Amino acid sequence: MWRLFIIRFCLIIIFLFSILFGVTSWNKIRLGNDTEKWVSANGTITKSEVIKNKIRSRVSWCTKIEFAYEYGGCSYTSNKLRYGAGCDLIKSTAMEFTQKHKIGQTVQVFVNPEDSEMAVLEKGVGKTDYFGFCVSILAGILGLGCFLPKRFLIGEQIKPEVSL
Image (cartoon, rainbow, N blue to C red; front, top):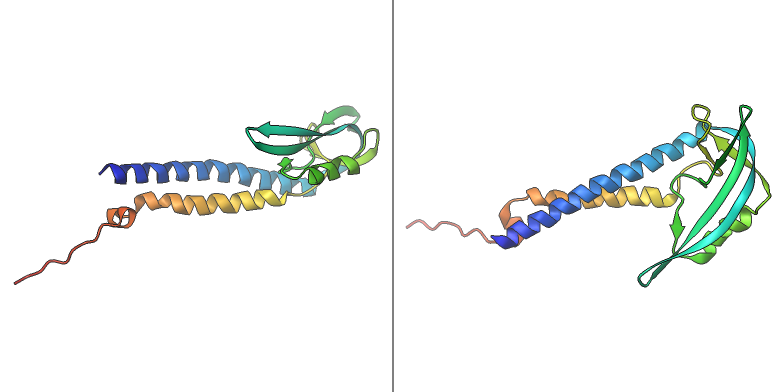
């Protein structure tokens, strides 16, 4: 009985996390796709560096790029490379962005015309967000296993009734 409870509990947790992760990924994909309609403005890179994050024995490399831009007669700053861009496990991948966007460089930025405080350096969506969304769907399907009958979850065999 406890074995079934633990299995179902774990599957429910997987299902709930898949929903949370899926909604987060979908929101990044939606926002990234919205940037395709944003207007361009001139900007200047004010910060460009790679930061090493170490959690236990795992190391990741985060690109920190900030830029200033003017839109509609007002000055703004942003640090959004693109929606979905984050840290990377490979240092050289993170370094590519800092080499492409050097401090003091004039760049084209893309500004949300409805909210000019929102701007990105690159339009579109990162590939990792599509991957994350697909993983969340697969985890959700796995999590739905909590609704399977008992015999599927713990492998009990149903013995046929023998009539004499």
